[in-house]
Length: 361
Image (cartoon, rainbow, N blue to C red; front, side, top):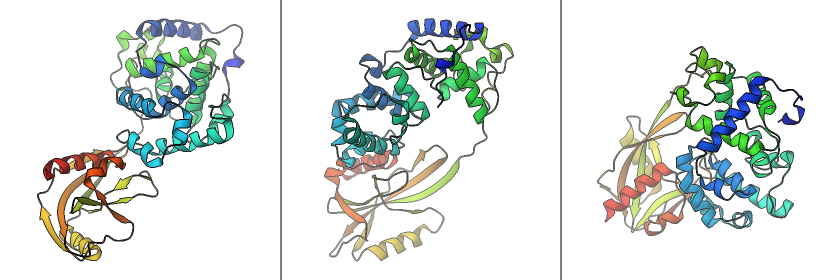
């Protein structure tokens, strides 16, 4: 990211000066009381910014508070076990974020004396810290003039200037505008203000234009283009259907730790495609992996879990596995149901396990 604020001309355009004044004044009145704003530190800024990536504020709040309660500083994370970190993150999604926090914390302890670096380029070298997150840390934690071009800021500026497009040139236009408008001594406040406006007023759908402090400056509002800007990409949801096998044996359930992919470090239950050949697939799986008696139990509620680009429908089927020689295939393990909450599972699986626990009473 280019540091733009230092290139500001001595005489600013009226638009950027008015934009800055109105935005800061609005934020002083409408600033929400959020836990990461009460006790600001480089560490709290870092954790909140990572949690807020692709996740709404109201979802993040309880996770942030629990996280700080368990890991009050970088040293606490660096010494933690990955399983505990992922279990605490469970339900927040995008688990690579948690793994990157753990990796970064260990690097910070090893290479930076346990203190988050106050250098943009050094921050960018840490796992999981991209341009936007590094700029947020530099401005919010260290007061440096780095504009944060997240989805909220991009949307606000795109509407103010009536910018169309989704490419890099638009990104640079937004960054330039923010760099010119940013007050040198209130960089963090300015970045928080524009993100706050995007989260609460300048919404992606149904923006609250009449409540916006910048509506008199907004070209999109004047031209009634706010529903067309920013430009939207066409997207379609991929539908996936699976049978989820809950194999129970003597108070234990069969699961396997995922070593790679988006669920790396999490534990999964066996699945097979729900494609009309379910009975054959179940027989093949059970027959291949077990030499024991298999008895069906009442099925659980069908659930659909939505990810960014696809919806995964899970049909849970429960079997009781009894007899001698109950040994799962390589990579699978029997986990005691009484201890299942000490293992991290994807949230969709966790809800099914909750239902199973109730059914097993």
